[in-house]
Structure formats: structure tokens, C-alpha cells
Length: 322
Image 1: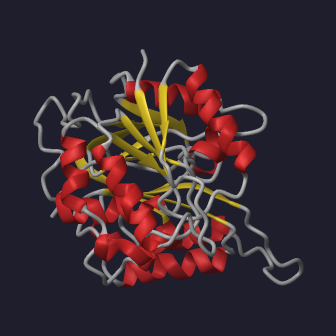
Image 2 (image 1 turned 180 degrees about the horizontal axis):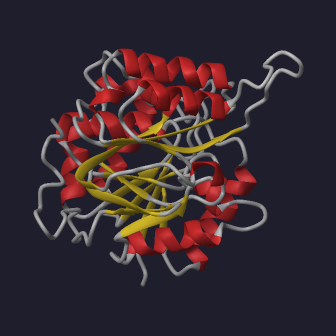
């Protein structure tokens, strides 16, 4: 099924142009019509063009009429332009059927858009790192992306770590799924762009952060009252962790998770295949989801969504998550 995919760069400049070209080629090989934004390879300082250039690229993506608007890469760049992003234009594009997909720095735009309009976007791959991976794109990621563009995606599942075999977890119904990169999300706290989601499912991931930094960000969210208001907190993949030999003395990510579980009544789950990893699922940020466990297997379901991003059962995906 041929789809129109619009590729643009709203964050950092594309450093690995070979990976970018491989990603574009792969999407074309899958049979899609690929349109690359004129400024996709622009460079200004560390960014993919100056702020005005990247804002214009976001507007072009919204006006493209594409089935999917896909980021070239993440990095850094969206938080500094959140006060100028055309949220209504993005929400209107989503209403007309354009699915916005990205990860990492894209978390800023996703959660700001959710706060301002209630529109649903997708946490998923980027062109270079994922479709342009040197060893080829991950099969699971590609299958999930295909599910999205063919309208077949209804949920995902994963197996919790073996150490969580006895974890008790009550099913969750009709909860707003939100979150993304922990560092980017935490940086929005206290701003008009942080979603006021109650009784939601918060998922988090990060890369190259020491466990103490992860714990500090989680403590900030916890002390701000965010975590206790959720129905579940879900850890994705935290990669690139470098502990200090002979100093951390057993302090690691599991320590952070265990401490969080001890201090929260909300269930804290782990093992979600999402983050700065090749094998990643696609997740609808802002959609209503249900979640249940069978032993160590977790099932996250958002139901069949029509071409406008609504859930068939109630059509309320675009309501404000307050």
C-alpha cells in the first residue's frame, strides 16, 4: 500500500547523511512516495537550520497532506521553539489524516501538542537511526510502522523482565497514554506545555543518562505530584548507561526502579520495547489505551483507529486529557 511520507528536520542537524540517504531509499523500496523537505539537511550551529527555518519546516509538514510526517532525527531543538509552533495547523493536519511520527527530542512537540489541542501523535522511528540503520531496519519496528500506515495497528505487547515475575498489576481501562523521553519531558514540567494527565499511563525512556540522573528526574516528577496521579508508569529502554567502576557500588537502574516502586502506590512496569534502540514499537501519545497482564506478558491496546486518528469505540482521542 503506497503512502505519502513527508520527511523533515525539526530538531538537530542530520550528522549521518549516509544513514539519512539509506533511510529514504528504504522507505522508497517499501513502495512509498517519499517527499523530503527542502530544509531537511540544513545546518545552523547544531540545528537543522535556525529556529525560523525549522518552524517553517514543521508548517510545511502540516500542509503537506502526507499520510505520515516523519522526523529525520531527534537531538535537540524543539523545546526552544515551543512558543512558536503552529499547534492548530498541526491538529488540523492530524484531523485530516496525517500521522506525525518521531522520538527523542520529538517528545517536546508531542506533549506540547497534546496539552494545547489534545491531538494524537506517534512515538516511533526516525529516518536515519531507524530506517537508515547500517544493518538494515529492525523487523519489528518496520512491522509496527506498516501497521500504522495501513490502519491495522491496534496495540502492542511485551514480556516484563524475569525479576518482575511476581509483580502484581491490575488491568487499566481507557487511560491516556503519554510520555516519551524522560529528560525532555521533565524539562517541560512547570511550563504551559506539560500535559495535565490524570489516571494515565506514563511511558519513559532515555539514553546516556546515569541512573542517579534518571532517579533525580523521576523524583522531580514524583514530588510535583505527577506520578501518583497515573494508573501506571512504564519504563522503556534506558540505554548507554555508564556506571562508575568501584563507586556506584550496586546502584543502578534496577535500584532506581525498586526505590520508585517502594515509594509509589502506582504500578511501575519495565521492559517496554521503546527508546533509543532498533527494536521499537509505535505508541500513540494522547490516545486512550487499556493494559493488562498475563504472567510476565503485558498487553497494551488502543483499539482500531480510523483514518482521522479517532478510536472507533468512542471518538474521544482528541479531547483534552484533563
